[in-house]
Length: 533
Image (cartoon, rainbow, N blue to C red):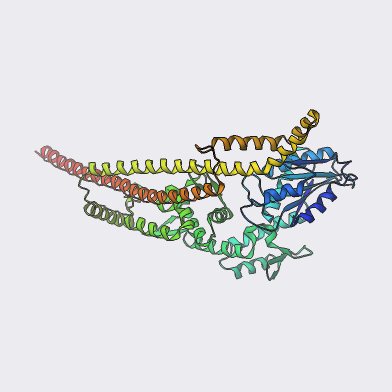
């Protein structure tokens, strides 16, 4: 079993001290048990700082110190521990520089890993939080199983899992936070409230901070979960004509999205909230969600135009425009007539269908649509405009990606130029070959950056400037946002036309059906008279 813990490193001086300690020849078999990825073991601080200057989110953390300790009862060699540590990092953080040193000076063999706090591909900052620590420990356990090592569940982990289950159970059975605390007391937990929420079980020796269980278990998150759970429970059924109709997964997803939008800080936070409410997310051509109790993913675009992925992003990027569009959609919206035999005898449904038919007629009159052919023509025109908008957005995304690739190439060029300069200083062919082998990844990235930059040269042979590229990206993003707004309007219009067409066809079918029933009734009358004669 391997136990994992992490700690932040906030300065280059501190980082150098840690490097000196973990590379101690007495602890690493004369540095045989030392390895690195995308950085040098001799010039680590400078290389970490070079990447850090491009960080998208600024902060004090320069690196993360990860310790991975193996049980002395496991028959593991130092070399095997080093290989497990390397695989551990490859699976979790393939885009981060790191140094790994295996110490064999104690009974328990352990790895010291120094991870750059900034991703060298996208320049995102590593987040040292309970969720990442749990992810690391799970991956470490997985590798131990793969290598035939024991996975011992610590006593503390058992207690943590029990506390999480008890909190989940209390949330499900509470309508208020006070009820939740009462339920936890009923389960024989002592409670301490302050900056954080703490619980101590009947058999525990110390209080446990719920923040360490994950983001879904902080006091703020628990309160939010109780509110959402209570509202969901209250909205779970609707009563029409003394019949109970349970909330469908589609309605439940709508309800969850509406609540998440109210509390989320940005789009990423919105996705995170839905995940904390047991929704699985699928990205790609279509954004889709599946609840843990559901059987299939539901595309957001199938919930209505106002729930489309572009509209959800617009909520955070331009809320004023979002609210304007949503009001416009609501005003124009026309539902489909319900024709299913399951609901048709329901008085509420019948009255709704009458309202829909009135809205259909009013819309046709107000918009000068005099025939089904004319409606079909408008529908085709609208679909054609949507296809054009999609193509334009796709072209803009391609241009943005190309410009971002050039900016990245410019950064890589300056980042790895010192490596090439050092290579040119070496005169010995043998030393050159050795240096190339040690720095092959950096050299390949430098060559790739040169290739991209050569392709991006202007007609006059000059390279584009990063500042000009960023301004062009901003212009393209603004253009894309404007097209996206028009696209959302077009989709809403298409939805109205499709529902109009469906409803008109249903009304015509009903009229034909009524005429058929009348003819059949008259035939039966004639037949009865003939028989009586």
